[in-house]
Length: 98
Image (cartoon, rainbow, N blue to C red; front, side, top):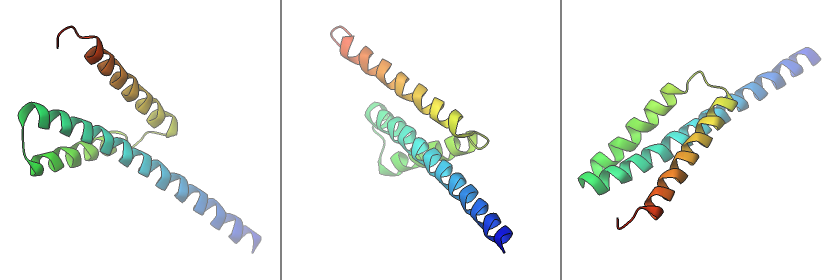
């Protein structure tokens, strides 16, 4: 009986870990998609349908691209994305007469 309970606890831990990792990947894809959709909407002036489509496609690509990644890979990817965002922000703030 204790073996059954231990096995069930291990399965719950594993499932919770996989679910949490999927949610982090989903959130990462959503934020990157939202960023690209906002950039595209400002540059091209497309409508609501294209805005949502860009978010969904980008989110799907990020989830598919990061399918085999562990927690460390996803966190490093998020760190790189944040650093690129800060670099772009710094460029916008420092750009002369832009």
